[in-house]
Picture (cartoon, one colour):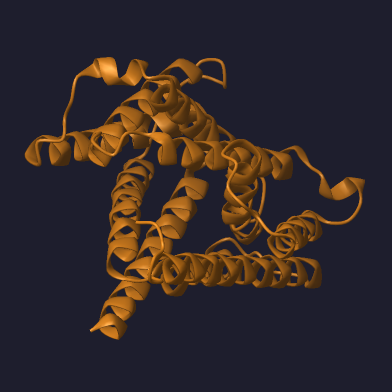
Length: 302
């Protein structure tokens, strides 16, 4: 039964990564005809409508006063900046490179949890974190020419996403996830509207561009739903590594639709990031297994 649940979890994780990566590709496809603010506004509008309808259906809507909670407010702000920085970068950096840098997110969350939430991290995982960030530097290219504004923008997005995830851990479990998602989508839409003029003004949209952003919002929703199902069905240590399937999608889409060709630096950096991430997942699983075993020993505290 557990193997079946793990298989379902792995499949949901693969679907989530496919949804997120295809969403990124669709957003990238319109970065040449509209600015980041307009993209956030249009995609955010579609996403807000979908999430609000679902949240209302499941009775997940709550008082807006909850948004005044510092941890929820900080999470929303971090999500907004993560979206801005990532969309800005997508129009200037290969899809596979952006996706590879984003794979450092679990390492960044582990680092943040150790520094700010006092979670225990042994020396082996510290080495894995350092190795993962070394992989990111290799993807960025060793040398000043690699540190473009777009590459640094993706790094900023990773930092903001890590803050978002750390805040999520501190939110009261009684607050529905759908409510947080709905409020975040609405705020991103409003911020996008405020950025349209400063980033260059509104540009006429073709039916193709509108359909791309509509599909992107749907795929984004599918990705979020599938990642929740993945974590609820399978063991984290088995399911989480399948997040790296997003690299297969991003490299394939980059080659087929954006004429991008991965080079030796990117392949090397990706390999290091994946290896360090898998090691971190393995160590985390071992730590949890040991903790559970100790708690189940006779006479151990409940």
